[in-house]
Image 1 (cartoon, rainbow, N blue to C red):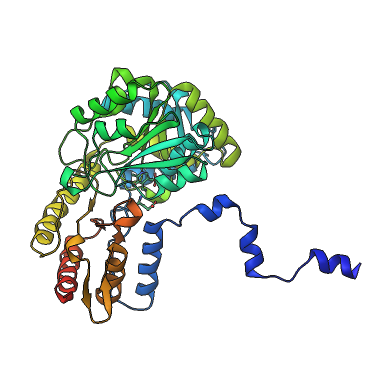
Image 2 (cartoon, rainbow, N blue to C red):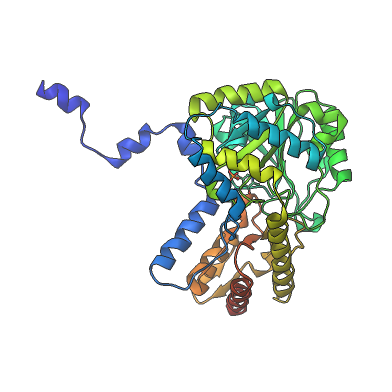
Length: 414
Ligand code: PMP
Ligand code: GLU
């Protein structure tokens, strides 16, 4: 018995436990945005004057009328499981919103509400990908896209566009990346991390390419829809040739400052929505009940708080882009939406400050955090190793101070 126990209950040992982890977990990268935010929090806790521009999280609180709706829902007894795809009332409100804002026609049975848009994207990838299926991801892209695809055992195929093409890949580039294994095309507009917005013509051209390949479906991530300074949001799903092959993703985190509520949704062809519903039913069930009630209310309520947030982000964008533009070695883009700036800093590579050499954006972000306590995220996490990302989710004073610190750090590099 003693030998039996000794054989089975080996002493705890880290190298053993690592080898027990799945290839899935080992292949996956930790979220760089969340890691940077955690590092900034840690430095703050140690008493450093950190300016944290790492996380894509509105610094505004959820508007009061939405919070009140959640409190009322609790008092009204919305404390139980909901249908997996979400309360019918919320799915109806989402259909109304899709029609009102985007010209998209969905029935409630084509909507799935999840724990954030992140889970919606994961549901679709889990529902549609077999090992080896390729997903074309327009780059720069949001950190989690490639990792979600990998977890679902798909292969990310990165189609890149640099600052010289406003970070927007063209239809011709998409066409060139298509193979017989291509299953999905995934992108966000307005884009995280670049703030670029695809025009109607650019979406038309991409739709035309996709429509020539029956197998390919589109995941259109429109979570920054309401933070669009160009005033025109276009949903690729309205284009006739791809309307039955587009999954439109949206959520409450950005436009309604509801990141912690964990509520996102998708509208999709019914067979895809059904598969997402089945998968979610085994993983997490329906999203939280009273949050869903408040979300249904939010979609149909006064959008003034959202407009005010967009206005504040636009002011910050103008200020940050102007100030960054004055720093030699930094080439700032002009984001048309979302709340990020994604400057190209490749002119700084090879420069040093004392023993520190900056050879890439990872080095630069580390140098910035260590010397000036400004937390930003390296472009390499978003598929671009010439750039770094600054989030505007901070006050104007903080942003102004952050740019002063960035300028100081850059000037020290020789
Ligand atoms: N898509 C994009 C482009 C994002 O930036 C984010 C960041 N939160 C998400 C999806 C996921 O949002 P959430 O899960 O909070 O709804
Ligand atoms: N999407 C936000 C960002 O890009 C939030 C963090 C995350 O979920 O990765 O920073």
